[in-house]
Image 1 (cartoon, rainbow, N blue to C red):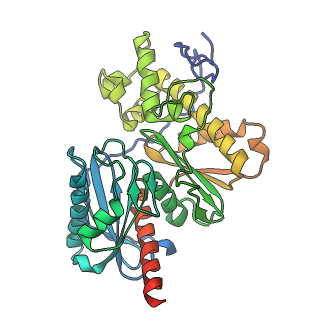
Image 2: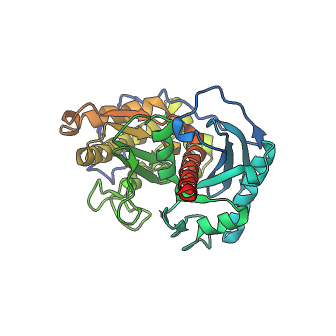
Image 3: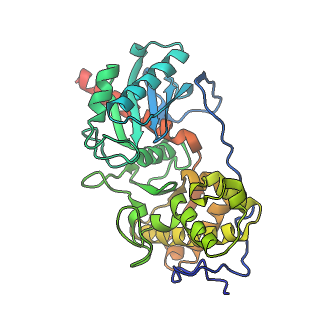
Amino acid sequence: MTDTSITDAHNEDADSIPADHDGNVAAVILDDEHPMEAHTEVHTRAASPALIGEGYVAGIDLGGTKILAAIFAPNGTIVSRSKVLTGSVGGLDVIDRMAAAVREAAGVAGLSLSQITAVGTGVPGPVNPDTGVVHVTPNIPGWELMPLRDELSSRLGIPVAVDNDVRVAVIAEHGAGAGQGARNMVAVWPGTGVGGGIIINGKIYTGADSYAGEIGHITVKVGGAPCGCGGRGHLEAYCSRTAIVKRLHKLVRSGHKTRLTRIAGKNILKAKSSDIAEAASLGDPLVLAVLERTARYLAIGIASVSNLLNPELVVLGGGVVEALGAPYVDLITAFVREQPFAATTGPLRIVQSALGDDAGVTGAAIIARQIRNRHNSEETA
């Protein structure tokens, strides 16, 4: 049994765990999950200039199980929130629910819908932000080539901006979170999958067909583990929550023990990021070893992207990072520093996202402000 049997990037099929490892992620910070109800809210933290503007705007964070909406005041602070279930029907029913979430949040804030000047939303999956068309969305049936912008706008009578959910979160971190002031920034978002985003010269980079930033699908091992997209050896196949629990499941089936079976139940494949974090905080050797391996692969991906784009800042977010916290970010950073060329290209900073669960609605509010400003410019031209 060797120290690298589970973390070695060249030993994909090994089922043994290291006899001794440094346990750098043992002190992970657990993620508190609190149910969110519709309510008013008062913030004392100064708002980012990216959120300040004329009138109220709404930001929507669309997920596979729930829809979160928040109303932002002209001074850039959140004044109310609402949550509705996404439901299982799919299609236009989901858009009806998104509209209902905005109406509910507005009502809780004591506002009429006419006082909301624009709405922004982040959507999982590939989106064309120029047309507002969603190409396809995982976990929401009937959304192939869905004209979300036009459908939601027709229901609310308000201008709507649409973009990919991770890209929206990156916009939030750049405009109002950990990336404020950065001219060139990369974001990596390990969650159910691995998303990402790129800021170049202070602006989000979308690429020729609005697909730029799919960091989860860069190859970190030729012919490696299968990825959900159909490829092999992609970063997502090693560093997503899905990949982590698959790896743990395989090791448990081969005879290894883990506290995760008591925390999350016998079906490890259903373990949440918070379950993994809890097991790690208890010093579970199997979970710690798998997380160390995952951190090494993330470091390979971050170093590769950094060598290509030379950003000044890398922001790490997503469910896995939020659950594991600063110790996991520190571990990834240490492994990036081990990459010879990446360590010499400049003072690259790697930080954890600052906005957490608010990143989705905050980024959506920022793109709502942007579309409202464009409409105002067109009206005065």
